Amino acid sequence: MRIDTLVSLVVIFLLLFTPAMAQASPQGGDTGGADAGYVTPDSYVERARESGNYLELSLQQAVRMALENNLQIEIEGYIQELNEEYIYSTKGYYDPIFNFAVGWNSSETPTTSVLDAGESISTNIRKSWSYETSVNQNIRGGGNVGLQFNTNSNATNSSWSYINPSYSSNLVLSLNQPLWRGFRQTTPDRQVKLYNLDTKINESEFKRTVADVINQVQSQYWELVYAIQNHETRRQSLQLAIVQLNNNRKKVDIGVLAPIEITSSRAEAATRSQELISSEVSITNAQNNLKGYLSPDTNDPLWGKVLIPTEKPMVRDVNMTLDEAVEIAFEKRPELEQINYQLAQNEVDREYYRNQGKPDVSLNASLMSRGTSGRVWDTSSGGGGLPGVGLTPLTEHPFYGEYGEAWSQVYAFDYLTYNFGISVEIPIFNRENKAQLAQIAINDRRYQTQIRSTQQSVMVEVRTAFQNIITQRESMDAARVARELSEEQLDGETKRFEAGLSTNFEVLQYQRDLATAQVNELRAMVDYQLALASLQAATFTIVDDNDVVIAQQNIDN
Image 1 (cartoon, helix red, strand yellow):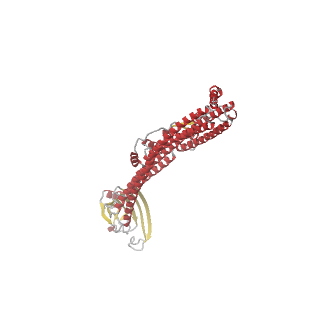
Image 2 (image 1 turned 180 degrees about the vertical axis):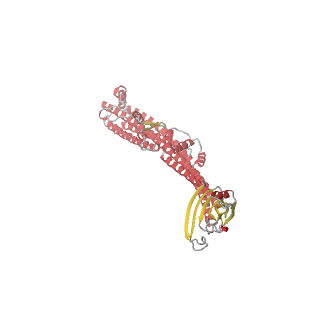
Image 3 (image 1 turned 60 degrees about the vertical axis):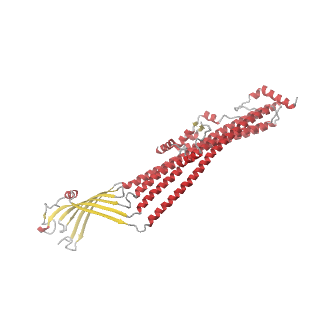
């Protein structure tokens, strides 16, 4: 009988009838002797669930939580609020303005002429008070209307004043309306249009921020999935190394394996244990990166919880062609939408400055009603020259009376003054306006070029994302085949080792190759998910109306 055949029979006998072989604990019990430190820990998810301080999270739940709590979205909301206040402030141009004034005046001046106050009057004394109120308002169309009412009283010691004290009142209605330049093209109206377009630009930028947050959350979620499953793969690889170490020790004990193989098995187990620890560090980093998008508060209890993703990478087909993807991106990408809004703002400026280049033709009209009353004296009756001294009051005079008499004249429109006029202002060269229109034309060409440039960038991004999906799908299929072949190779090599036809080194190497293949397959599956997310981001199909509503509710609250 050949020696290798005899060795094979001995190994098979030991495997079938040695209880110690069958009782090797793959779950982390005592591995015996000096190797008792090599144990297989429980899975990361099991340990988290046993601690009780964990949160199971689906991808949709993670996205919703991020949209409700993300600080960048909240910052974008402040910009929207500010823009709304700008619009509200600009509309204040059409708010009516109420004015009220009241005053008192008293003066005493020496007379130097008989014409100042009268004969034998050395000091000219005047006392007056006034009251004025008005309402003015800018109106749509560029004009301005005003309504003013004023009244005042005057008392003097002058003998030349036959109504003393006197009361006068005026009611004035005025209108100023541009007929050409500025007609329905006011500066505030232009500013409101620009602010409204700014609001649309901010809304578009807000949706872009939401899309970026969703994309980042998806990436960090799948990276956490990869980190946890990579840790599980390393744990299973360590478990295989420990089983191999235990089996080798038994074989050394019965003399069918050289003691040096225990050393190589222990070295491999130590290496895989180190890789396991390193993979847990990756989980911690992935957890923190994801939590940074989910919680805005550093004191949030979420930071103390272990996040457990509930979703696994899945193979999903793309339900659009490359041309359809590019067309969708051109329609939905916020960058292109924002440039179109900027073009609209440029058109608002063009209409405004075209109007500003016209001659200024304005209509000015006013209507004033006057009223006068007071104590009227008959100066022809003689007297000492002072009112009330030897003079007779004319009580039947139409002006005789107090304030009410003047007011009744005003509101009866007894004494009217009309004013109507048209003013014309024609710019000769108007170089400033021509330069402004030229700048607008340049901006228009710049925006058109920017659209083409952005479309080119978007197309490149979509094509890259679309083709990357195809590549990642092929990579995932190749990784799956490589993992299946590695499993077959390890299974075959293990059987050869058990039959004495292979070495411990080769078995450990195939175990390592299998772990690498499993990690590569996992990485390929996660990369495929990330490639799908990249295409969604490139076509801007990553955001739906529900996502925007959730983010907006966070701002409103």
